[in-house]
Length: 205
Image (tube, rainbow, N blue to C red; front, side, top):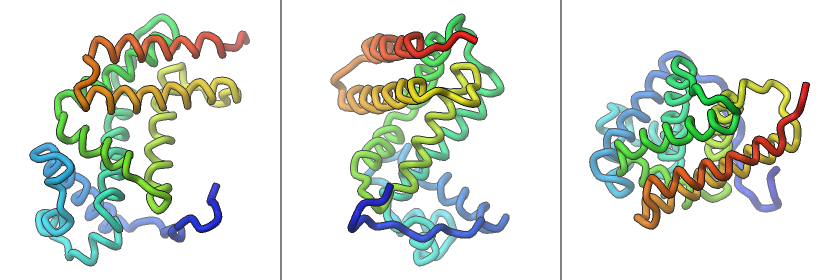
């Protein structure tokens, strides 16, 4: 919902196959640089050079480093979602499956902490101009959680509210862990606790 004075970019036309390949190359380069040196290592000029695109072209795709890193997070979540579909969680309840799914995501981020830190910082710094990219991250996270719940096609408002709280908690625990203020064990307890909201919003067919 745009607010007065908010910055919104016009909807872009679908990318051609060549443009999509260029975009993916940029995102892969960004992830590689972030894995190597975190947020500060992602410099637009170096991303452009390593991706073999002009700097002006890079800015047309991604107006800032924050836009670029938030888009990289969406791309990483998309890959995670594909992996989870091939090997879905095996918990008995929806709450168990969502908790397992989010902990798998955490462990994937744990393997590349500098990349995780760079993406989390970008989300934290994101202003209204980055709303489309942030919305994509949120939609992707929601889709992952709904799939883990059992592939709900028509979730109730209460279920969607629980998903939002779970998503907020996941993001918060990620930041807390990256800051060294929580262990993975503590993160797991928090994730398992918030996932119990799913049981409170379950409906009987």
